[in-house]
Length: 440
Image (tube, rainbow, N blue to C red; front, side):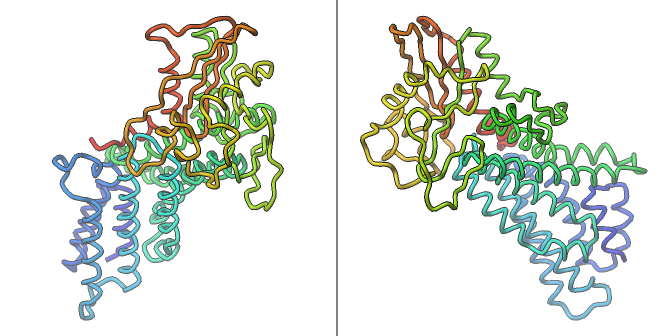
């Protein structure tokens, strides 16, 4: 009995080969384990474990744990010629452990409406623990197809790390992690698609079963790339940086417009705004560099001062309206941020009511759950001296949207601004991606 062949068929979701392979397993305990793993892998790849409890057969996290216990019981049995080697049983236990932990990661993501920085940090720490398991040992004992477990973990880890790097305005780290995640996803999908060659009978079923998980990971990667395109828009356009494709058809073209940037351009055309800019709120104790290369380990840092301390990381059209910037920053400081005469906060990434004004507290405050957000109404200010109207509103914790109109502009009932800010927030916080895996 070649257990590697059974494992290969299970991981590649090969329902055409699997029955014949399973029928050759002589030991009843091993047969039950392999049969259970085959069923659970189907549920795992199809995301059926994210359905409401009434509509799913098993709690997949518990199911994998029970398989691991069954393997442990096999290992404690007296020597049996029909049992696989101890190293194979150990690898099967690790397989169950990886799946059990990754189920928790996906369940956590599915319970949130948006991905905030605190949640991202916790998930990245959890996935780092999974990545430290001896996955090469599993490949040696169970076969090359087990490599997909490592590719999945690697993809998720680097997407989460890319998200954290974006929030800290580190272009180099964000683009590196995105590249690694894309590379891992490509290799993972190649293994699955490659297994379809010569097996057309089960090909459609395999693709349908695996589509949920792979599609989610691709959407997540595209959403992170979209966020990079916004946060580092100036760097990408000025330096003609070629990233991994921001869209499936972009082919790394720096001129390709991602969804968030398209949203800004569409709003400006719709409302005839003079300028739409996104202002990045610099962390007090993490150095900010306009080129996107932060130096968080430096002991000292020359802080930006004046209007330079409120950089526009993306503007439509290409440059922020510097002639209006003093007015915009003045409104931002007086209406959205606390009085500048107060003390600087000691904490750099836990935005709380002690640092931000009441208007921003409900939006910036971290929470363990994911309740509907209450951002408050955008601030409208008309300056008759320069004949310009300014609209400012927080979009996500590090970004304030600044909109400038020439002349007096009044938002009509059912206007476009609130909807635009909400859509932008959903894109930058991956709300649309997470909604696709909400418990259903």
